[in-house]
Image (cartoon, rainbow, N blue to C red; front, top):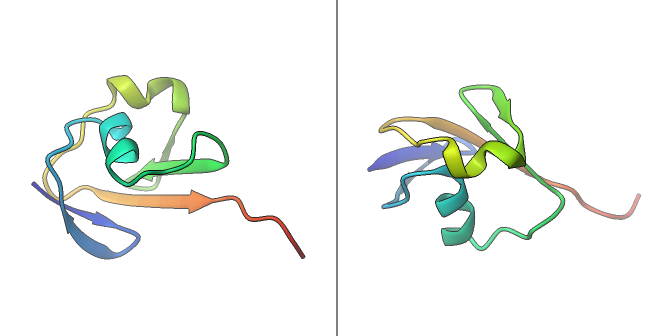
Length: 65
């Protein structure tokens, strides 16, 4: 399916946020994911399905100043 991640189109076979995070090799901590501007708590990633055309925002925490 085609989804948009941070305003770039991606093709994925992932069916949940958790599967997408694994596919993208996101770190286990310091990451926030929103679908259509709604933040999804990490505890819901396994149960939150992805849909064709979803707009996903991924934010990674960074150290430094």
